[in-house]
Structure formats: structure tokens, C-alpha cells
Image (cartoon, rainbow, N blue to C red):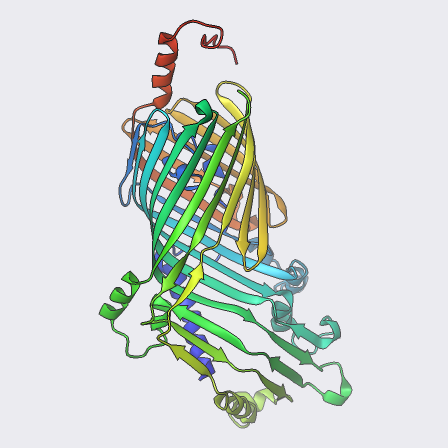
Length: 480
């Protein structure tokens, strides 16, 4: 039955979201790590052309940290808890703040292992990371109908378009090997990361195309409404796909998960235009996961129509008139749902783009601008960040950012790395407001970790510089 399929699908989404991150459905790009790139080994994950200053860095499970990164573009806790003059939840304000297309997104990562080795002109890193990405889009009319009912005159022409609803959730393990190198006499660095992917769970509704025609204000139709749902697909695989198989075994799931495989690619570059100005860019998560046939499941729900003519609520509660439920059950039970199992399929990763420029204000201070874009179902979701960075060698690095994303320009972030040989402590957030005033926040972002770091490439270069001939080009005057 369709109810059972949808219930399993919703449960699957909840399970996947909590499987690795358990941070809820709220995401934002990892901008602050770019500001800490010279001392944060994990910044190499954003751009494989970034060469951290440490000769050697190492992170262990439970120590090298985690990153929770969530966001939505339409509300906050203060708005959800606001009351009107009668003391009721202010649904009017909530609806007024809804967008035509509302998005909820979630990214989280848990570092299992990290190893980085820096040469004089190169950097090689190996990492193992658990990741989860979740995206949900839904139209404003969906909430309007729930909050206002079918008789509201606020519903334009009584027609509710549900065609912008979609969801996609992926959980996987990423095993990556990256290499970055200086070229053009050190003025430019290029890097590449090759990633082997192990898929854990996948679920999506690519496009749910439905319309509700309400007639609450039309005297000749009473309180009826008409539902028109076009054909749509529910796809799932891995752990989520197993929910559709009533005979699944835990051991079978473990074997199935290990055989969901894919590959990914990250590309990056930096260019030193002058001693003050540097440009950088990277393209991340170009790749796919091939989901094996064991728990691959696709359910195609055919198009159907249904007209609801109203019901006496008291009689419905008392069980005296169940005709409306029986009628709807009859429509649903007569649907010929096409279920396809045992056919492998591939899904793409959510691609990301970083591009920007930095300006060296003084020897220890820099300012930068970073553009972030995410590609999701043909849509480009952008963010723009201004960044300030203060760095005292590899001992201390501090960054402060202001990001415009989801229509807001007051999204502030901050982060630091503190090197207490041989340990490095990392604390960062891309949304400071979510920590100091969570009631007004639209995002939740937090990074914490402890890395083992050894050596300073910058010191070695300084000593080499002092040992070289004292020409105009090599003398360090110590003037910013």
C-alpha cells in the first residue's frame, strides 16, 4: 500500500539523518576553514591545492573531530514560538516569511583518520571520513494549506501547487588521497583528490508533482477539495532500501553496504598574483555512487485523482461516519504501484564550488572574499563571505567571517587553531549567532577537533632565506 511505502520512506529519511550526524535537518558551507587554511590540516579537504604549514599532521578517530553544518532559509526559533494578540502561535507571521521555494539542508562529517605530509613544495594527505548530506525542498503552499485550511481566502484561486517538493539524502564513507604541488616557481599551486566512496544509505523523491483545488469559498461546492497527483517515484538503497524488504537481515545489510561503491574527484588551484594578492578556486565532489541491486528499490506511484466532499468531524471522531476514510482507502488500494527491486542504479554527489581572493594586509593579517556555490537538482545555491584572518605562525590562527546566505547578510562565523605541541586544538563555527542567540539563528554550524601536528615549513623556509645571498630580492626587512 502507498501509506506503508511513504511511512517507510519517511522513517528511512529520519534514520539516515541520525545515522552519522544526528544534527537534525537544518546547512551552510564550510567557509571558516578557508580562513584557517595555513594551519588547519582539514582545510585541504576544501581545496587540495592548499598546502598547510605543518611538515606532518595526524588525526585519530574521536580526536581529529567532527563538523556539523546545517541551515534553512525560511524561519527561526523566535518566529516559530511567536504569539499573536490572542496568545496563539502567530501562523500569519510564519507564513509571511515563507519563500516560494523553501529549503532545508544538512551536511555533517566525522573524521575517522587523517594523515598529512608536507614537503618543501608539495603536500600529500590521506583521509577517511563519514559523511551525510540531506536536502529537502517544499513549496510555500504546503504550509499554507496545513495552517489555513481549504476554506481560507488567502489561498490564491484556491489552487495549491505542490510541484516543488523534493528530497535527497545520502550517507557514505569517503576514503581520499590528495596531492598538491607548487608550480611556476611557487607562484601557483595545483591539487587533486581522488576519493573511493562506500555508500551506506540513499533515499529520494526527485519531484512530487501534485495540485489541490480547494472550494471552501465557493457556495456551490461546499467544503470540498479536489486532489490531482501526477506519477512520482520513491527511490532508496542501502539501509533505506532495506526498509522496504520485510525479510532483511542485519548481516545482509552489512554485506550490502560494503558493496555500494563509487568514486569522486576534487580539483583545486591557487595563484599568487602579487606579494599581496592571491586567487584560489576548487571544485569538490565530482563523482557518483553505484548502489548494488540487493536493496535497491524504486516505487512508482501512478497518477490519481480524489475529491473530498467534507465530513462531520464529530461523527468521524465517534466512529459513526467513516465513509471519507473508506473512500480514500479504496482509491489508494486500487492503485497499481509499480515496484522495481534488484536493479542497481547510480547517483551523483552534490557538487560544490569555492572561488575567491585574499589580500595580505600585514605580515600577520589578511582579508579575503569567498564565493561558494552548490549544485542541487539543476539549481545553483550561492553564498558570499568576507573573511579576516590573523596568524601568529603555526602557534595561533584566528579567523572571523561575515556570510550572506539564504537572503541574510548578518551570518557571522569565527574559528581558531591553537598549537600546543604536539597537539592542535580546533574550534570553529560558520554561524556565531546560532551559539550566542539560537532563537534568531537559521543555521547551526560547529567544528571541533584535536590534531597531532609536527614541524613548521615556514620556519625552514625562513632559515633558507637567511642563508641565501643578501640580494634585494632575498633580504627580509621585517616591514609589512
